[in-house]
Length: 225
Ligand code: C5P
Image (cartoon, helix red, strand yellow):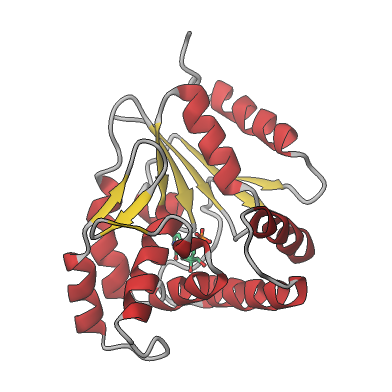
């Protein structure tokens, strides 16, 4: 069985950075499942869907039609267009969390996510990697941090990318998105019962990475050089 490390948690918890680092260190594949929901959110926004109560069948059909590519050098393409930066916009994050509540959308994305499980291993980053998509993951990590810390981190990240964002706006939209993700009826953001919980509020990225490596070592997941 191809091994999977599942890293779940809310936005800004550091899971993207940790997942990317782990995948690079192990030479494993990386699944950024949030990007898939962002792509669906963006496509739905562009087509003028009412995201509060969308036509679910039309939305599921849309997911089936999307031509999504993740290039080896880190670009995300939708129907051939480069949307790498666009999907990081706060309004696209909101659209993502609105479409992510819909069961048919989640089901339509399942095959794509399972398809990312290829040799020699997969690091999967998201909200339900350990609870729904890869329940047999060899290591499940649930990474959390205070909402203040997460908003500050996301703000710095977006500023660095040149985005025009305000910290108070980001804070409230992050909190709203969290609420929605934690309280939805399908695949809510909750730790798997067998997940290792890490609160990264007062930890550096290096410390979190070391902690995850320690858990990977315990499970004999670290590839020998
Ligand atoms: O991780 P990221 O911030 O890119 O995710 C964007 C949104 O996509 C989340 O707020 C969440 O609603 C949704 N999502 C999800 N399940 C996943 C990954 C992301 O519902 N596995």
